[in-house]
Length: 111
Image: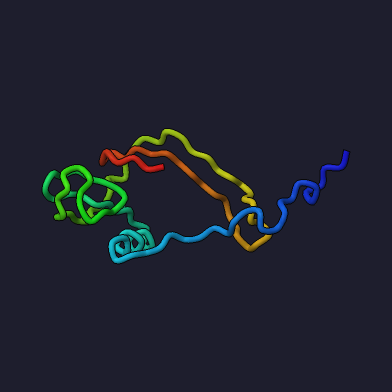
């Protein structure tokens, strides 16, 4: 049985090229902090709750007075997956892909 990689290769154009998320004035502080290795998230000054994704108003109390604060750095990892060789390896996209479901101590869930 012949099991070379060409036999199972995807046809060109089957998988879309990964795109980066758009950066807006609302999300720029998050991306700037991430580029420096820091993880920040919005915290409402009215109700004190954290939330993510950044919104104009707090999704818990609808107040518009919130600020970016550093995340605690602690949480619970519920699940993760590592793809060691993504489908775009022949298009110059290198490295592993990592996805996780995490609930931070700040009571924010990410997936």
